[in-house]
Amino acid sequence: MPPKWPIACAAVMALAAPVQAMPPAPPAPDEAVQGSLAVFTPRPDGRDHRLDYSVWTELLQAYVLSMGPPLRKMPPGGAATPRINGHNSIYRLEGAMVGFDLMDAETIANIARYRRELEAVADSVDIPALPRNEQLAYWFNLHNAALIETIAAEWPIYVPREITVGGVPINEARFITVRGVALSPRDIREGIVFSHWKSPEVIYGFWRGEIGGPAMQRMAFDGSDLRNQLERVAREFTNSRRGVERRGRTLHVSHFYDEAAPFFFADFEADLRAHLGKYVEGKVAKMLTETERVKPSLYEHDIADLSGGRRPSLFYTNGRLSKPVLNLLLQRRSKFAYIARKMPRSGTVTFSNIILPGDPLDKSEVE
Image (cartoon, rainbow, N blue to C red; front, top):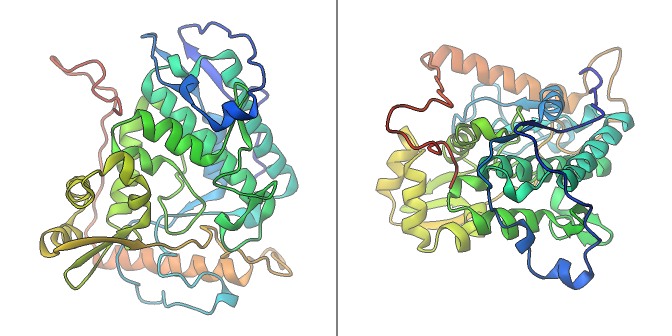
């Protein structure tokens, strides 16, 4: 069982140049909540402010398990099992899973406290004046912390999007408050980030709690390495079966691309193919050239957790994991053994924050 997650008194600290405190904002009236989100329009002031999310990284590393690189096929020993034994999704060995099973009431309360502290940061730090990558990291981490908190409080549940907050579906419920403005997860994604950033890569920063979506990362998003972080998530997702599939002459893609189309893929097929072409490799790259049409049809709304949203009557028995979790972990071990036998060793070297002569100072900024 992972250690208790420590919570810092100050969840997020401003680093580097000092940031002027801002007076508390009055609560926004209902009509303002429904209207413009212009108050969050980016307007960086040029100072190199940084926010520290190391506390959030501690939580993620304690409760998020990577399922390894996408294989696009089940390895030996990874056959589907009845739901009583946990996940039976074809995507269960892709992306990452969150250990909601392992979170006790104290941990969930600490996550809620951290989310409130993230919200409160905006009362003393002018978020829209931060460097653009810092703004993005803030919105990603706040959104994802709020989703983990809410799902953890409702767990066990099979389908996260069926959760309601105050009778409103989770994606539309305005339960996140920043500078007095009540925001829903969709407001943050579409009204703030998608509306003010041009790079489609930003869609990969938002975790939705679903096994069919971009994976939760084991490190908090950080403004100093944000481009590399997003590109790693994009590469895993686009090369996975939950991101791209081929059936005949049709390229089937995740419905998450369809949701983002009004912001990033105006000419849906051409723009999406160009985007995917930056990241897909091998067989998936070949799919782009051998298909005639694109259809956003892939989706799986089941929860991205270790047990498939099922709480066993006894999760631990003399220190042993429950059957649903153990079943998934054994399949994961089989996958990694298969990779070790069949796939050549490879690695990735990432260079960040290196400015070469002639490079613009903002070359790592996500547009």
